[in-house]
Image (cartoon, rainbow, N blue to C red; front, side, top):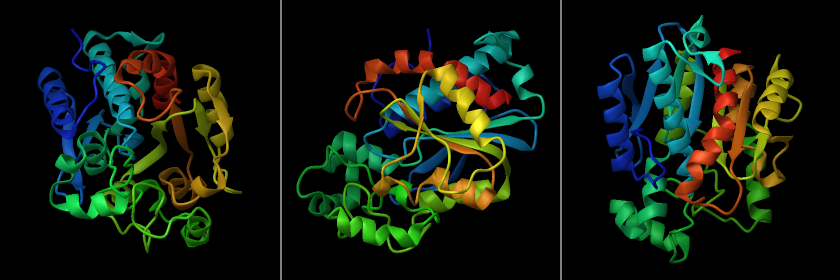
Length: 299
């Protein structure tokens, strides 16, 4: 029976899933990138021995917990195929690791996921502040425990965000789309950027929900192979290559990686519907994306 089943994951169940995977597959390595605002470990899983990584990241937003389940299901399937010398989507698992390793950060924003799922009980010592910032309802919380939207806290067009925030009626910390006063002000974004600066990451995928779209460039910045890989990912998944709305077009991890690392990065908006997507959608979303994720590792 698979370890990663369709269910809504809080931080405790995610951590338990990771321990179970590492117990079953001794070659799967687990460590922490750092701590969240509320002191939770930022889990990172790695497979392979090579110094060049493909990076998968997920659950930047509290209502997008399903993305963590999808990337962990891929890790589980990949580990099983490596152990049996098998294939995924017709691709030999061992072949995908020639010259490459995989790094997976399944929950970039564990505090935000807890807050959106559990309300005040998930906010811990930040409960009063988050309740005030939310206007009294936490079930649509996407930000971290300080009310900073992590996918607006990266240094890519960051100086353009205040005007866009004002135009959207966003005046300060809250449930979504406030990027903070400076890029990388949050421990979660700083930890992810630190990993990318320390290690050689060939390309990065940031998994969000929803829309069945793939964002592949940032303004005029188009690293080599970006368009070609994006077209392959779109053809494999059936998703559409797109550009985000203006308020969502700066400060993101994908944007920062493209501009600072000058290598390809993609935002994958998985699934269709209204966030949070129901956990039972996980299996069908995964099946639609499995080949794409394998290609992302291989190419």
